Every structure is written in structure tokens, then in C-alpha cells.
Length: 233
Ligand code: AMP
Image 1 (cartoon, rainbow, N blue to C red):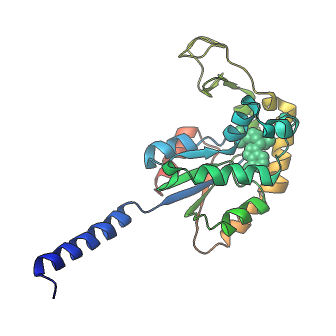
Image 2: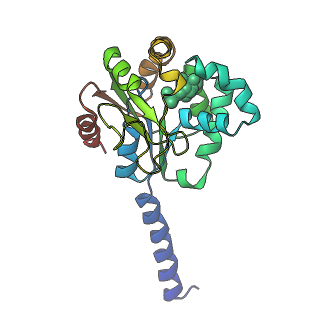
């Protein structure tokens, strides 16, 4: 027969593991919205989980001149979507990393129904989809004014978030660039693709029973939109 002390120890250990599990409940979010919906940073700060931007993952491939970079260079500069298999593979590898074990924010993924199906069939749990609706004119204004420091990925906006010195990164003083796919012509193409390939995900996710779907008006200024989203988390 077990001693009472041993029994107490077993019960204590069991309860500790149980409550630790509860405290670390996952928060996995998909941000749906046209390019430059810009809410991932705010959620990372609020929830303490990493954001996974497929645009950033793909740009990292481009700058590392990996084998994949040859396959995606032209597609990306034309504002078209990269092949599903490539993006799905990058996302799955990233989600398997340790910092994603308590959740993550998917920013820019999925962008097609096959990508959403791949998440589901890989048993990657998603708790929330936040759909940020932004009018085209606003998207064009936000993107065409965007400037990037390529080495760090810091982004600025000529009007809404200007650097201290025009055209220079605040921290390094190095030149800022306009991304090739941020030209007005390419933005229009990206919006067209968004409507035909990504918009169908709205209805797809609304039908998913275990995922909370949140609609947000993304036309207001970025801080107001963050406040609106923050009410749900
Ligand atoms: P973003 O920085 O999210 O605007 O993405 C920049 C570009 O990366 C897009 O225009 C696409 O060419 C590519 N891209 C990003 N995410 C995806 C995705 N989920 N599926 C396919 N292509 C993507």
C-alpha cells in the first residue's frame, strides 16, 4: 500500500501539470486582410506569441539566394502568389519551432483554399480568424508610401510613420528602399489576386465550428483598429 505522503505527492504533481497546461493554452490566430493590414506587431506584444509572416519568410529565402529563391523571385516581383507547396512547407517548418508551442499569429497565410486545407489536414490548431476589411484606396495609400530597411526589415511610411531623416533608417542611417512589389501597378495586381484567391477564405473559415471568426473594420487608423481587435484577446 502507498504511503499517504507518496499519494499526496502524486496528486500534487498531477494538479501542477494540469494547471500548467491550462495556463499555457494556445492562442493561434490567422490574420486575414489585404496587404498592409498591419496588426501583427500589436498582437505579438499583447499576447507574447510570435508572428509568422509568409512574405518575410519568402523574402528571407530571396536574400539567402537559396534554391527556392530561384523559383519565387519573378513571381514575387510581379505580385503573384508563390506556389502553395513552397509556402506550406515553409510555414509548417516555422510552426514546428519551439517558440510557437504556445501559439502564433499567421500573417499573410493562408492566402488560398489549398493552403487552408493544408493547415487543417496537418492538425495545426487555429483558434481565431481576424478578418480585417480595408478599402482598396486605403490599401494603395498605405503600400505606396511604405519604405523598408532591407537589412533589418524595419518598415516606415512617408506619411503615417516617417523616419527621423527622410529616406534613412532610424537606427543605422542606411538607405530605405521601396519594395519592387509596392509599386502602384503591382499593388493593383496584388489586390485583384487577393479578391479572387483569398476572399473565398472568409466563407470557408466562417463555416469552421471550432474557430472564432472576428470581423474588424480596418479602414480606421491603425491604432484604432488595434484597440478594436484588442477587445477580443
Ligand atoms: P506580403 O509581404 O505578405 O505582402 O507578401 C509579399 C509577397 O510574397 C506576395 O505578393 C506573394 O508573392 C508572396 N506571398 C506571401 N504570402 C504568400 C502566401 N501565403 N501564398 C503565396 N504567396 C505568398
